[in-house]
Length: 109
Length: 117
Image (cartoon, rainbow over all chains, first blue to last red; front, side, top):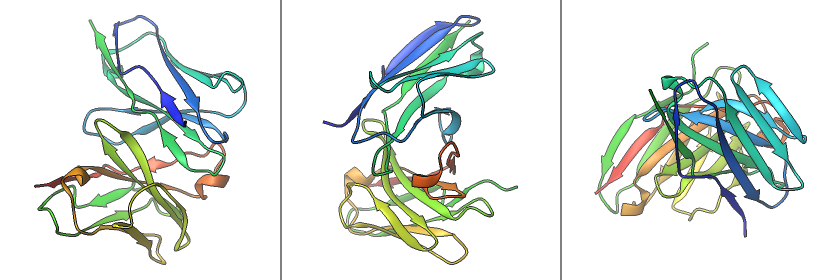
């Protein structure tokens, strides 16, 4: 079937590093996005991967392995404001956007 | 530059009624996509419009429909509302259609929270 799986919840400590995994089985692949969504707010774009490898942007990095259907979002030097849901989304072969259910990250002092 | 705006922000309806939601994209953006977000299902794609034409449609019943106007503003209509339609409805805009956007991302509006009683 077609699925995008990510952990439901994660907890980490301020200043630490956390890795949020995403595995996907979709009909074709035309890119993978990560979004951040604070409670009650709209999702905001974090990163985009279409080729294998690591994309780094400040404290956030995203990795993709197309052969494994796997991506992760790495957050370094965690801050309290990073507490949010992180959504993994795949643009499928027919160009529909398919989203995972999201990972709710709680950052504790 | 103003962001994506959606109206109304909150709406309460009863079963069987119909509802129309509005989305104004970022100036210069011609693609508008609609999504339904629920706690259990996450974000699910409804449809995408580009230059007044529906480009893609997700797996939703025909009760869900939409349109786009010449100024790129879009409306979404849900007829014969059901309790399960209670959700946050998000619209997102981009300059290009989703299929050719490449790295370019969509920008989401704040959403309309619909409650069906």
